[in-house]
Image (cartoon, rainbow, N blue to C red; front, side, top):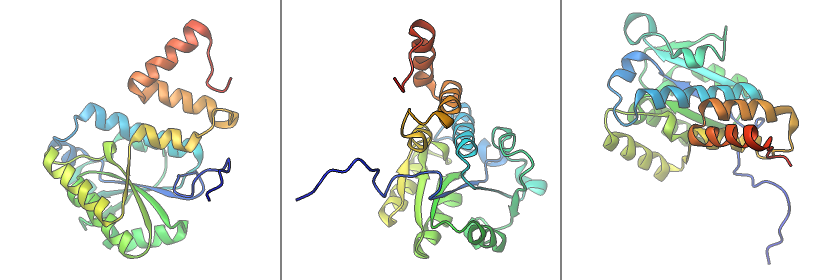
Length: 217
């Protein structure tokens, strides 16, 4: 017989059990992305970047042919991780780059969260490769995009079938917070939710303005 205990499940993310890998959020890749509009994509990239920074999650930022072809990484990401070096590659599959190998091993976490462009190439490649080597992989689906909805959805299905765990951007932030009584991160979580949480953010503005409401009470 199962016994309930007031403890989180092992499958949940927390700031100390994973690393975030942001892949090829670059203009050349974004131009052909059609499964999600550019405004939503940039918003979600900012949301997950701020979430990781707020909670001290180690992040790997990587680009492909940044100087010669694909352009700079989104400012929504680099402004959050100001001064952090980007790992530029030639490989479409991030996992095949030696510098990524070094950085993943340096961080030393066996649970990885991926987001980037395009889902069917830049995310499928490292996801399947990392799963094959025994890592747990989560994919933030609404912070990924592809040349069509079909391409994006088939890529997500392929990764899920292989064992990857899908999630969303706002889910990522709230899963890290997970308890409104955690006052050390409460204000930043609310601030990020208001700025990037869409209708949920509007609800927070309304509740706090009209009733001075707080989730922790």
